[in-house]
Image 1 (cartoon, one colour):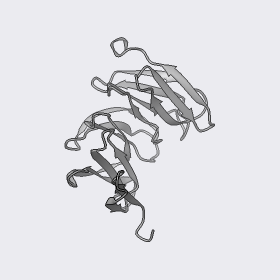
Image 2 (cartoon, rainbow, N blue to C red):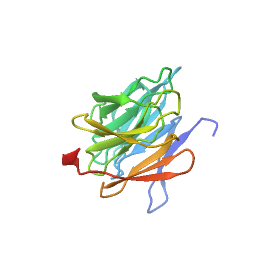
Image 3 (cartoon, rainbow, N blue to C red):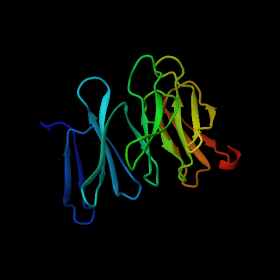
Image 4 (cartoon, rainbow, N blue to C red):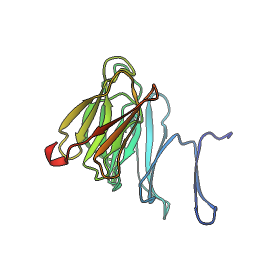
Length: 193
């Protein structure tokens, strides 16, 4: 389109367009479909303007400009994982944001931007690739306790992860890589983590 990327929301029953947001590049939707988080470039560099919108009312809760881009939103809609932008050296942390006001909750380890970030179904863990030197050289997947920041790592092999997903019961983690392979990992109960 001539005005750039567009996000459209539709009523599934009627097929009627509800909203149209022009110029946005990334978005996240809560699992209940009530909250939309979207971002678009904020001028030059790798900063983005992030906005959280309540879809039923169209009310914007907050807007914030930050280096990087949104990567995942927790299932309960309370926490946003914000990943670092494409910078050298790759030393910016994955940051957890409070979805109610956009404030920083906690910084986690160094990560490469990948959009391969996932919350566990109970929102107690977050999985993301860790920086391994050069761009796309991540060889470890980090699992973080969202509340404490405590971490454990999984050696994931020779290719950069491009997709990460937890099973609905949270007991398994699937990691897809840029070579087209998928690894399946068993996840220990949270109390053992």
